[in-house]
Length: 74
Image (cartoon, rainbow, N blue to C red):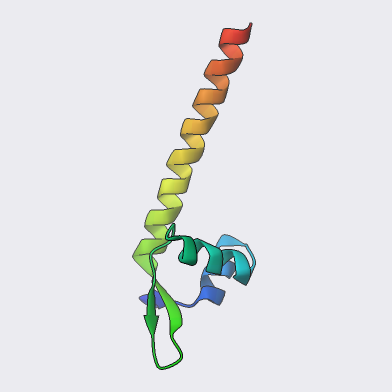
């Protein structure tokens, strides 16, 4: 895989729309740079991998919190 990915590449890897990938970049959730005269976004492969790992950790934490909440209700 190349060092830098396009928004289309990121969208394909995450199985989301290009608009959703763009929203991740615009919100700052997924670090990216603008390159070229037209300011096209590029995402470093390692930054995408870091984002994916962060999302796994956040999902695991949410699942643990949900499980703990269910246990306190019973």
